[in-house]
Picture 1 (cartoon, helix red, strand yellow):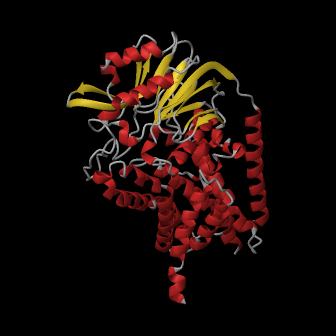
Picture 2: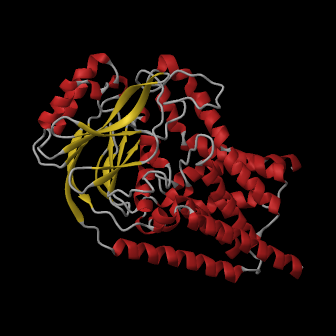
Picture 3: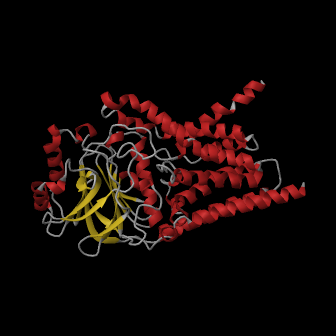
Length: 501
């Protein structure tokens, strides 16, 4: 029996980690949160630090193995070359990422805190570990707990003030407070009830107020083209002409638009070097319209050719008047990190690994429209999608999720994009090769969308931006203040309890 009690936490922790994925898009079942975090709290509170670290790691392993299982899909695009890497890649990355929740849980156990003080430090350490996961080494802020509210209009609005990391802290705190409220211990039960009610009220009232503010149309019409080119065909020379023709035909459909949007790597080649391709584009664009398209670019540098994953802005005369180079590249897909001992073949199509661009960029389109550029993976990083010095009127996110088929990946990626719109108070328009393409307003509402694996062109009015949000002005400041407040309050409560005893 003692041996059973010793090893029982491991499978329970793993199960809780997998169940946690159900709280996040596309499942969005937030009622599992109290079960998961309440269970994890009980498994690790006042346990030996190493025991808590291992339990937290096993929990994280279950969470990531299920939550990022979609990564395996990309290795089977060229199964004969990369298929063998799918299992090790998912397992290895999950094992690495699991160290972040393990660290948070170990630090929580080290404090020896329980009841309300324990809940406060538990929530603070969890959200700090999420921030750390999204910041150090490659940075991978995927499936943040705050995204449990991405599909829920009112609570989602809190991200406009505290960001997604701050929303994660609040979410974990609300999920663990019932432990104190429902326990037999009377200490701080009333305080916990009040704190729970105040947080719910602030989120509800703040969300309702923000949603009540009208969002007007900008008077600008965009056309999103979703070509739906299978990844196996995207770089195949046999399909090159038909792939280009598909985008041209969808772009030339009847209707009037001001901005034409193509997804990441829509043009299979170096468009800047193909005058005929630029003239074809000029012929289909209305007189004052522009095309923003994902494309690969190259130039000669000191060490030879340099490649970028880019967005080009092209006018109705076929001239490229602006260029954006992706600055946050996908590790092992678009580049090999300098600290990695591995030298692996490039998964993405093209001639070589990419060089990162200088950072977020805002470009001026004809008239008074300013757009912030982003490509694919960049939309998962809170606070790093638009320029700090030149706020745009909207965000364009060109992406290609064809790598991941109809798995969880494209849907989780889309949820991240919705949260960026809320945080920045800006509409975000997403053009995806195989979906999900969409127009998202500054409240995170989906104005229009094209589903997965649909071949379609969508004309829609661009919504207006909101005034700058607290998050867009102050970044992670409110999140940091919340962290400090939780830790100070926990220390005070713990000190008072020790003195009382």
